[in-house]
Length: 353
Image 1 (tube, rainbow, N blue to C red):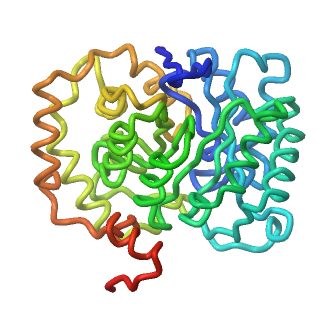
Image 2: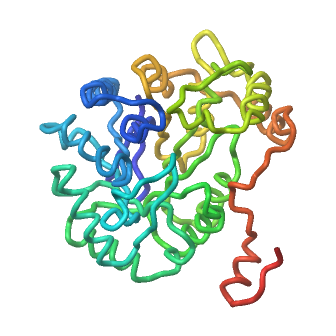
């Protein structure tokens, strides 16, 4: 395992982290408490120190699992969690699949949610508190960021940032936030196959000269870059990938076939996908979807595998321009508003449909 420290901080994290959403939400299969805790223990044994939760993952279950897994090892791990959804009024409301409940980013709600997370985590501080799937209104709302600063001054939070979601126009949320706010971390979806809008957001931070670094989730494009799917793959009934259009599977398998050159006897495709991300020094850590011990061992070993060569990186860039040999993707779930359109919208000017 290797480690990186967020710029301008003492927040040191493993370059491969453990995202609790796989073991607490039911979207990737169901786990008993004992199974989840055992997997988390193995992760720490392998050098994984970053554990990323959210109050909405299992309505607090992900945070409770951290407390149960590491009751005496708080100083050995980095705890990241997220707040912003209105669990008080909607936490027990029936939901279909991954449908979201309403947000509440008011100062009172953020403070209340942070205190509740601390209680579930059974700790006195959160190492990284992230605003969960914020919109442009929150990026522009000084009260939101003043609340985060207050929580930091109170010692409840060491550092803060935001986590971006794919269905809310996250390109301009991300760019605006790294331009206008001094956030330690931005968590977003980014992978070798899905480079938009991750690359523009990271480039915006670089161009703005900010200390912001990135925490990358879904680095294997929902498992596609693990290289194990075929056109005949069938997902379990409770697996969210079962609800994807079949074209996602067919095109994804075709793309991966053109990336097999990254596989070696001492490096899997899944490991290469993580190393591709870690070539960017702004990436503090990656959060592969971990759902069994074999996979955990593979990903935790990635930082020690042979790095990608310049020729590998150049070939990937060429393939990306060709959509890796597949038909053009439908980008309806990605933010597509340009910064010019956003600026016009902020001035109250009409935006073309």
